[in-house]
Amino acid sequence: MVAKKTYDVLIIGGGPAGYVAAIRCAQLGFNTGCVERWVSDKKKPALGGTCLNVGCIPSKALLDSSHHFEFLQKECGAHGIEAEATIDVAKMMARKDKIVSGLTQGIAGLFKKNKVDWLQGSACFKDPKTVVVTNTSGQEDEVGASHFIIASGSVPIELGSAKIDSGHIVDSSGALSLKEIPKRACVIGAGVIGLELGSVWRRLGTDVTVLEASPNFLPTTDLSISKEALKIFKRQGLDIKLGAKVLSAGSHEKHVEVKYQIAESEKIENFDKVIVAVGRRANTSDLGLDKVAISTDERGFIKVDDLCRTSVENIYAIGDCVRGPMLAHKASEEGVSVAEHLAGQKSHIDFNNVPWVIYTWPEIAWVGKNEQQLTQESRAFKSGVFPFLASGRAHAMGDNQGFVKVIADANTDSILGVHIIGANASELIAEAVLAMEFGASAEDLARTIHGHPTLSESLHEAALAVDSRAIHF
Ligand code: FAD
Ligand code: AMP
Image 1 (tube, rainbow, N blue to C red):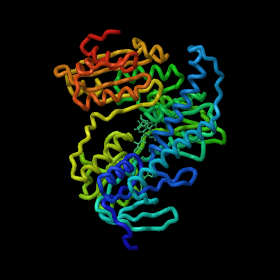
Image 2: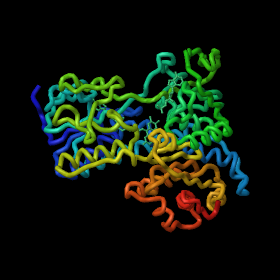
Image 3: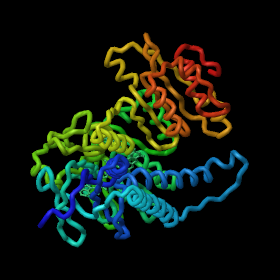
C-alpha cells in the first residue's frame, strides 16, 4: 500500500463539524479532503452526519408536520377554520426523506464548488501523518495529510436493559422512521431528544409515557423554565414519570414489556414501541487513536484544549467527539475556528454564548447562565420576567404560553443569561446571543427599539423588567 494522495488538511467525518471545517479550510486555500462513510437507508453515500441524516433536520421535519396536524385537530377551530385532519405517515416520512436527501446532496454540491475531495469510506489512523481509508467494497487506500481534524461525532448510548431490536425497541434514528403510529409508546430518557421525539408521536395520537431516571426535569435549564415546561408537557398529555429507572424491556411478538422502578416500587407496563433516548457518546473507538497516542476519557471524548488541539501537534478534534454541548452549531463553530487557526488567524469561541434549543411546543431556548448556576457561584444578579400572556402578538397568534427571563449582573447590569419558553423561542434567542456576544447590558436591550407587534417585544419587556419598569406587565 503506497500513500496515494496527500492533503494539507484531511478531515475525518462529514457532519456539521467536519463539512464546515472542510469548506472553511478550502476557502482559506488549503488542499482539503474529507473522509465520510455514511450510507443512507437507500444505500447512497451521504454527507451531513447525524445532524442532516438522523438528527436535527429529520426531527424538525417531523416536529413541523406533527405540529400542523395538531393545529388542525385542536386549534384551528378557534380561528374559525373547520378542518378534518388525517395523517398519512408514509407521505410524512417521504417528505422528511426528501428534505434530508436534498440537503445532503447540497453539501456534496458545496464540496464540489469549494474543491473539497470527498473520500467515501472509513478512516483509521496508521500514524500521525497517515490514515487508511476503507471503502464500502473493502478496498484500502493510504491517505496522507499535514494536518488532521477528527470530527467523528457521536452515536446513541445503548441501554443494557433495553437493547435495540428489529422493530419494537428503537433508538432516535428508528423513532424518526416508524412506519405507523404506535398506540402506546415508552420514551426512555426525558432529555432534549426524548422530549422532541415523544412530542412528535404524541401529536400524531400515540399515548406516550416518558420514563426518566433522574428526579429532576431538564436539570440544565433555568428552574423556572423546567417547572413551566413540565406543567405544559403534562397538560399536553405526555405522561412524564421522574425518578423512573428502567430495569428491563423485553420484546414480545406484538408488544414490549417494560419493567421500571419508581419510588422504591417496581412497575410493569406494556407498549407497542420503546424509544431509547438516554444520551449519546463520542464515536471514537474505531479511529485507531492508539496508533497516534491520543487518549480519550471514559465516555470516549477526545481530550482537547480551547483551540481543539489534541495531544498530537498536527491533529485536532471538534464537534460531538470532544467536550462541550452536543450541538450542531457548536460543532460547526469549532470547525471554522480550527480552520482559521491553521491559517494563522486568531480564533476564539465563547462557549458561554452557545445557544441551546429544545424544539418542543412551546419551544425552549436559552443562552448563558441560569439562576441556579449563578446562585451556586454566589454571583449577585437581578432578573426580569415577561410572560407571553401580556404580548399582543402572542395573543394574535393564539400562542401565549411561557415567558422570557433576562438575568443581569446586579452591579454592572451586563446580561448573564436569557431563558425563553414560548412560541418561536428558537428564533428569539438569536437576539439574546448577539447581545451577549457584544457584551450588552440589560439597559442596552431595554433601549433597543423592537418592532410591534412581535414576540421579540417580550425580550425587550423582560430587559425592562430587570429594572422593574416593564410597560405591559
Ligand atoms: P456527526 O453529525 O455525528 O457526524 C460525524 C460523522 O463522522 C458521521 O457522518 C460519521 O459517519 C462520520 N465518521 C465517524 N467516524 C468516521 C470514520 N472513522 N471515517 C469516516 N467517517 C466517520 N443539534 C442541534 O444543534 N440542534 C438540533 O435540533 C439537534 N437535534 C438532534 C436530533 C436528534 C434526533 C439527534 C440524534 C441529534 C440532534 N442534534 C441537534 C445533535 C447534532 O446532530 C450533533 O450535535 C451534530 O450532528 C454533531 O456534529 P458532528 O459533526 O460532531 O458529528
Ligand atoms: P440527554 O443526555 O439530555 O439526551 O438525556 C438522556 C436522559 O436519559 C437523561 O436525563 C438520563 O437521566 C436519562 N436516563 C439514562 N438512563 C436511564 C434509564 N435507565 N431509565 C430512565 N432514564 C434514563
